[in-house]
Image 1 (tube, rainbow, N blue to C red):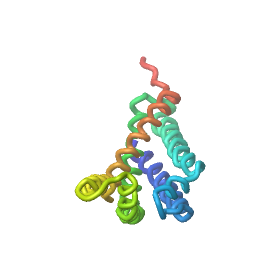
Image 2 (image 1 turned 135 degrees about the horizontal axis):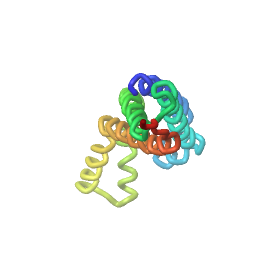
Image 3 (image 1 turned 120 degrees about the vertical axis):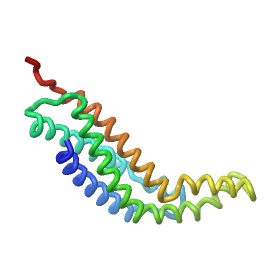
Image 4 (image 1 turned 90 degrees about the vertical axis):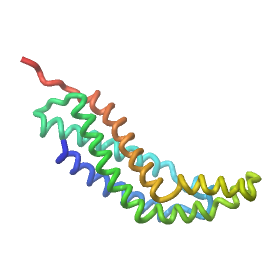
Length: 171
């Protein structure tokens, strides 16, 4: 499992990081509305399709090369979980060191006008700011990214394993 998972995790990480970098060059990060409207549909589509394709390819390789054409459900799920974990760690570290630093500052700058729109002032705004900053810190975003990556990989792994499952014949 691990050699196959490591290989495909590196591929997934490199592609994801490259796409994240390319897409961040094109996005307007000046306000919350701009952030929401600048994310294009094809960016979201690629963000889901690429991991799905890579996990299917990895499970197929694990089935054909490592298991002589057989694949138990657990083997496929284990492969996808390993891919999610390894690529999640790599991507989270990259995002922690680069993009999340910018995002954390941006969120801090954009909070006050949003709080004013909602009628929050003084101590109420300070409490809301502290809660928002707790969940938008670089560390929190890296952890959420890792957890999300593993979860999505396992969901895809369940589907892929059910589709490609071929239990070894018992004698």
